[in-house]
Length: 421
Picture 1 (cartoon, helix red, strand yellow):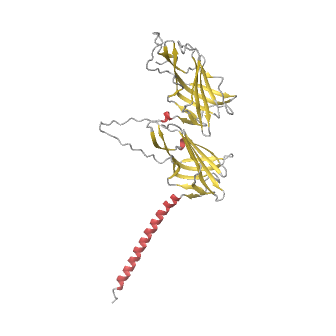
Picture 2 (cartoon, one colour):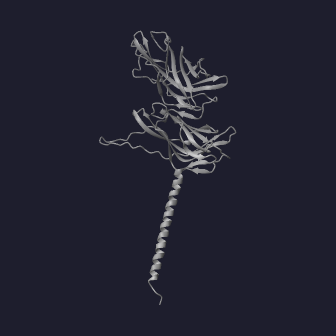
Picture 3 (cartoon, helix red, strand yellow):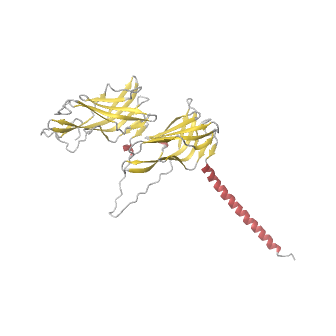
């Protein structure tokens, strides 16, 4: 069935409205909505939505399926919010029906805090032979729609949300942004987990064939170049590094705790932060993964160090957002006025369920001059790696010297046994 209008099933009165006994598919098309405050746009959404609603009739229960029509419009109760009032997109359509999305945000993310639907059972076109004429409102706080601030939430895949036992709404082809800084959707996207999932065909196995699971190690991550500037556009924090994240979380599909590894991809990562004394921050965001590094300068010892790491992530197969942090770290210590360098891989254990592997790291969060790194202080691992070949070389040189001395002594003793005639 490829129709947009309402379609009912289950009234059993032998008329032409029965049908679609195994479900309906509707050719819903994306509709664009924009919430403004004066000349400023705060919410913009392009989305398709279809609804499944069960309702009572004189002969029993019917189920109606219908799509959000192209005539749907932004309702008058939509708002950009302000103070304690959150932003809200209300979409009005049909004879007294409305879909509402309420947004909230924190330092990194904005999300749809709740989704509600108001539908009018007196609309006989949508709800034929309804035994009630009341207006029904249903709502849920269970929404997986979230994105980084200053990015567009994108989810082309279908996503069903249950608003009650009688009402379901299915979203698709969604591109949406709240707390906007401009009139257009950001080109920087936060992609939903369904769109990120890649499936591969399972190998064909004989009845006796078994395959043991073998995790595939990730290659070393690409090195990213991240710069934070002050109000004058001058670089005040420099970082060159490859980052690999290790998270232990509960798997939705396997229903058990698993460990996942992800490389941060510099070409998809945005950097932000702040500079100051005694603290500087570097925030990195890639899709639904957000990292914050806090560096502290000890004014007494004149050394800086990584004092805190915070992470929030929502990866495919996670049951909920993974949010962790540790504010009492003492990693990457270095003298102020110098840069910290570590070419070797090193692991930063933040909490038992989260750690970071760094590769080819060089950073300087304080006293940056001329937009360049200062002279580097190398990490202990690099120093030890340099020391080993020196020790081996010295040992070989010593061995050669010992052999040479033994040879000369032996030769001298051989000459001493003869006399000249």
